[in-house]
Every structure is written in structure tokens, then in C-alpha cells.
Length: 316
Image (tube, rainbow, N blue to C red):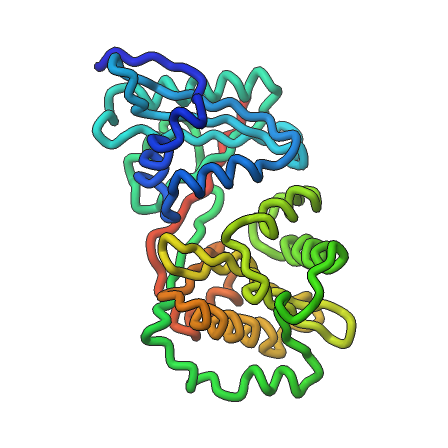
């Protein structure tokens, strides 16, 4: 085993290497700019400790993070461990994990939540050996905009609009704090119907900073469905320049308006928006138990790819 020591992460000093490590395990590419923006938009009041494993030369070969958001269920902590592929199976991951777990325990953690890619069996085995169980399976799907045939869906948007539902983007209205608050309130309601929702939602200030304050935000990529003055549906997107893709963060319609193709219409308007941006693809994540949304995505032509397992560990 190489000589390894654990130290707190020096974020600015380590940022380029952190991007390299994240890119070994995460689907969304990280850059120095992306990580710095993510750091600047961290929620207020988050408890977090990040450790780095370094070899004798000072090279950062692994990282761990233990964190808990102030808005989250008491006792729920998140742990992430990443080890450079060239240094795995040497005990570094175990050391990083134990250090992160100790921090969480000292802060009163009762449940640990983690995430692993579903095409990384070694990572899943590492977690299971430590008592984690699979809680949810999240599918990542991609729509190739070059081959998408909108003629198959001709008339659907117009039909929804003829039924009294208005579809507009944030580029069409004055973007006030009240309008942003309406988006937040709608998202909070819709999140309750997502399988696996744990009854927590960040405060408005954190939501506003993360979504509206991010470089990925485009006003014309935030689509609203309204019945008169009541907002009843949303399709929120982020434009990811490194992959030239539009990511669907949330598409949802409140319960009494479902079954009227409003969600499908929101998706179609989002696809038009993506093509306007010049994006090559649309990307989305869906829980394996979210049958209605998976059915819409299948109808549109989304192709499933590697996804994520969310894992839970109950601490005794």
C-alpha cells in the first residue's frame, strides 16, 4: 500500500485535481469553473467536512465528503468517496470512508445516504460490504435532437393551449422575485409526488441562488404552464455548455391537471428550446418507480443509459 496521509481539502489549491477526480465517476463533466460556481452556490448553513488522501509527492489521489443540509431530516448525512482509478484496491477508500463516517457520527447522524453509478459494480460492492442497501434506482436518459421527429407530435401543444392552458417561458415575462417564488412554490408541491421524496426542500434563498444564479440558467429554458393566473406545471432546464446539452431538472403538473397531455406539451416546448440553443441532446433523470414520466420519455424517444443507485445505511 502506498504511503498515504489524510488532510482537509484546500479547495482553490486542489480545484483542478478535484475536477479530474469527479470526472472519473460523475456523468456531468466538471471543470474548474463548474466547481467554483457550485462552491459559491452552496446552501447556507450546510455542515460539511472534506478530506483528501495524498501520496508522498502530495498528489491528491482520493477525496471524501460528509455533509448535512440545514433543511434536511435530522440525522440524515451524505457521504461521498472517490479514489483515483490508479489507486483503488489499496485501502485508501476505506480510510476516507471511515474518516467521513466518524464525522457524521460525531454530529449525531442516524442515517447515511450515498450514491453510486449503476455500471460500477465494484463501487456498489464497496458500499454493500459496509452495510448500505439500495434505496432507489435512478435512470439517466438521453434524447438525440438530431434524430427527433417532431411531426409525430404535431398538434399536441396547440391542443393543450386550446384547452385553456397557457405555455410561456421566463423570457416572456418580467422575472421578479415573486415570479421566482412562484416557481419555488410549484416545485415544492410537485416534489411531493416524486417517488423517494423525503419530505425536505431547501429554503427559497438557496433554491434561487442555485438555479437562477447559475451560469446554466436560461430564462427561455424555464417553461411554465398556467390556467388563467394559476401556475399548474413547470419544465425547468439547465443548459450545459461542456456537453452542449439541455438537462431537464424537473417536469411536473399538479394532480388535478394530469391526464391532459400538459406534461407532454411542456416536454415538447423544452425540445424546441433545446434546438434553439443549438443543443445536441436532452438529458433527464427519473426514478425507476416514476412510471408516468418514464412512459412520456419513452414515447418521445429518450434512450436509457447508465444510471444511479441511491443507498442508505442505518446507524446503530
